[in-house]
Amino acid sequence: MNFYIQLLIWVVVVCVVFGVLWRTGQLLRLANYVQETKEELKKCTWPSRDELKGSTFVVLLSILLLGVFTVAIDFVLHLFVKGITAN
Image (cartoon, rainbow, N blue to C red; front, side, top):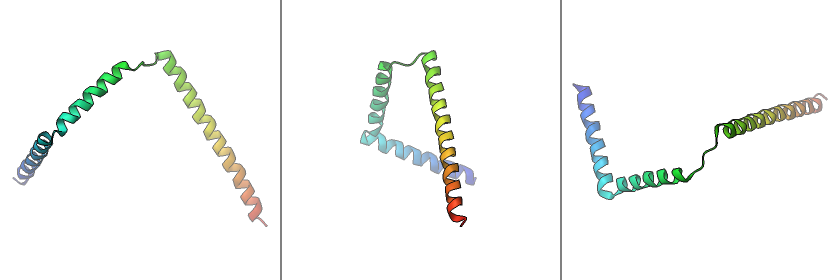
């Protein structure tokens, strides 16, 4: 019984929020935004599968090189600090 009361309360809350958004015109604004976004996405040129593979390879290689560089600098700085504090 308690579950059904909570469910009813949530349904009423959702309906009230929906009604308020409808009356204030927010739902129309959201619908216009979605429609304009669809129109803009139709104007986009999407990469081919080969271009996507190439770009993905470049990104992965860049991440790998940046990771190796970061680990190397961290190792060098660790040795430097360890050398200073050893005295």
